[in-house]
Length: 245
Image (cartoon, rainbow, N blue to C red):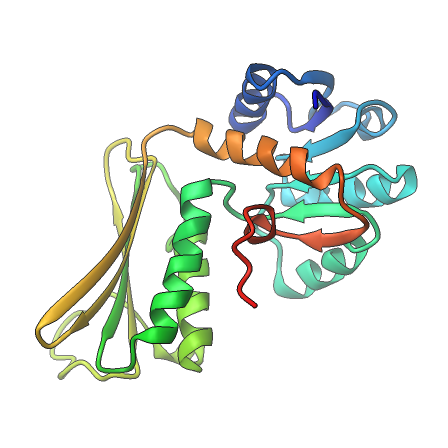
């Protein structure tokens, strides 16, 4: 079914990619809203709103979506934990998909990592390695942070178990630590590897992104999915049917 899609953050790199992906999939762009425009314009037309703007705008976007009862797809990150909880409560009042990464492959990596962490015991040392382009300002990446969250949850560990790189005489590795290593260079869109290493064997789960359009296509897939849902907050695991029971 062809949709009419409004985009918030339309002039940004992701906003433009989403518009291109939507049109390639046979959908129509109802409104393109960006900084300085009236946000409400995105909510008075179209079937669904896709927001890839700024985290400072998320509350206003959600409030308008609730007021106009518009399904919403959010790709914005960078919210403080307490703020995210408040916004998540607001998002429950409409059909909403909110994810930090809309790549179908990355979301499958999340599911596979959860399964591997559950099956493989502490005999398997776990390390996460990510690489991004030289211009990326934060580390580790949001995707790596989610992978670490999954591993810590499955192994019932706190964030104190994380080792952000290693230097000096750190002693032998313990079974209760999880390593995270951030590499930066060139124009790498995003590489993520989760490694489970035991004595005698090693399992590596790797995803490599070479084109940012994968995120835009995932966001459009989420928009197509959420349009038929009742009110509630979902993520890409729900969209792809990867949610574990």
